[in-house]
Amino acid sequence: MARAVSNKTKTINTAIAGTIGFLMFFPILWIVVLSLKTEENAIRAPLEVLFSSDWTMESFSTVQARSDYFKHFSNSVIISLGSTFLGLLIAIPAAWSMAFVPSKHTKNVLMWMLSTKMLPPVGVLVPIYLLFRDFNLLDTRVGLTIVLMLINLPIIIWMLYTYFKEIPGEILEAARMDGATLREEVLYVLTPMAIPGMASTILLNIILAWNEAFWTLNLTAAKAAPLTAFITSYSSPEGLFYAKLSAASVMAIAPILIMGWFSQKQLVRGLTFGAVK
Amino acid sequence: MGRIELKQVQKKFSDIEVIPPLDLVVEDGEFVVFVGPSGCGKSTLLRLIAGLEDTTSGNIEIDGQDATDTPPAKRGLAMVFQSYALYPHMSVRKNIAFPMRMAKLSQDEQTKRINAAAAALNLTDYLDRKPGQLSGGQRQRVAIGRAIVREPAAFLFDEPLSNLDAALRVGMRMEISELHKKLDTTMIYVTHDQVEAMTMADKIVVLQAGVIEQVGSPLELYRTPRNKFVAGFIGSPKMNLIEGSEAQRFDAHTIGIRPEHLLVSKESGEWKGTVGVSEHLGSDTFLHVTVDGFAEPITVRASGEVDAYFGDTIYLTPNPDLIHKFGADGLRIS
Image 1 (cartoon, rainbow over the protein chains, first blue to last red):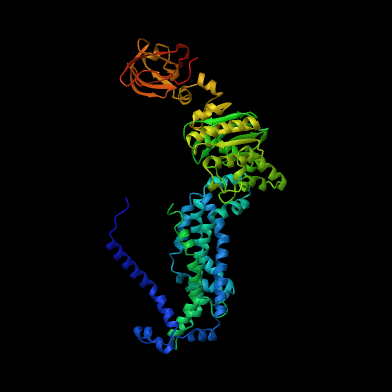
Image 2 (cartoon, chains in turn red, cyan; image 1 turned 60 degrees about the horizontal axis):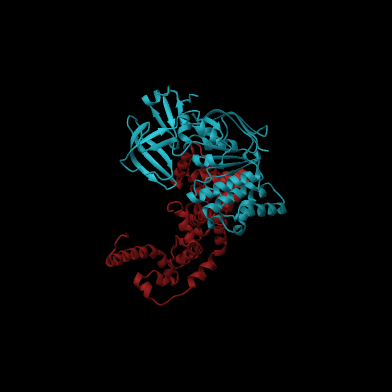
């Protein structure tokens, strides 16, 4: 029998959930509101901000005029897609071997990889900065692509490993009996079967790379700076320009928000893959 | 051609010996069934022949050629798995074509073989469907189709019917037997179901704990089981094994009598007993009888209907020519 829930409880629960949801979403909403105000109105008390009637797109055009949005945008696209692609190239074979030919150390290796994610990034900033300097990778898209790939590699491998584990070994053995080489087995059998999982891995990784701020801010200056650097350039020592900062933020998060919105079904399916039958 | 010979083949998983060194010959065109309880190593043995597992020591020869280190695809064998192992993202046509695509066969030849296999297996109408849209029996036929088109030296079946329901299983059993007659190719079939073994095999290999207990035709195994294990494993319901003073009367440690070799009478007979559970199937009657002085109840299979129910006293007489005698070591005394 289904659990009995009274209408009253249902209403209360819905109200609580709705409130929490709204509170979580509020900062983003507020950024959108501020980005549509003049600089002068944006620093007023919240209620005044909301009810002043000077809605304007001025901040957006100022931001675009002052700094080249599309350059930063294309840097973000190249870095997030590039690091994801590079990561998959390494993660697919790694996850394959751990899922299908595990050794007694596989679990430890997986845990070790995950543990690197627990390390505070700032702890390795100096050595990585020096390496980048010596290899002439500072402020290059190649450098950022590599570092973001490395940062997210454990997550990609873990996710792919989980999806690969779900694929029955007999199917791969059948492919082996049918004469498929290892490359053909991965290409024609494993990859198509793992596509839902791979898609969510790719999506998640693009989002993580897109939003990554620590390395992108510390290792770039002008040439390779992605949208994260674009946002921070509006919180300057001369003072905060709320409207412009908000406009820049909206412009930076809009693409990934839209992408996330359209792919949320895929993302949720991917993240809970295997958890529910 | 498909003669397979195992010479002193041994398999260990780390330190555990799953299959002690073992010899076996499967002749060309034979239908051989590996049968035994779960965990007896029958599937491992099949996987060793397929090349999906590496032997720890010993040699596997296929048609006189040493194939011990040959990769699975190069052995010329085709395998049908318990879970069917179809490629879920490919249509039936593509599933069947896959091994030919890997072998880089011409498109014409592929089409020809797909159509022939589909016709033989009643799959013509389903060629464009995905495996997910098929029933269990159809999926199993696709798996067999995928094996047929390779024109292998031998077919390996790993419990192919255990995921099907009882009625379908009987049908598929006959289809596989017919296929064997038609193709005349060597088939090695693994099952834990002794009825499948008895009905399909030319030769049965009974395994226990990786050791071959007996090799022989179904009726050889039924008539002259080499030891108590085979005696109890082959035949359904299983043979009654009786120890103690009754066995000593026959100069044996244990005597065995099959349920169908006991005569039931309400008036007189050798053993007097009380009926426990009685199962009346119309064609047969199964009685579980507690006989005075015996440790275990005796199962009786009488043909037709027998008027005996719970609590009735009946007499049983074993057919003296069909009593099996075993020594203290479990081996048959001839």
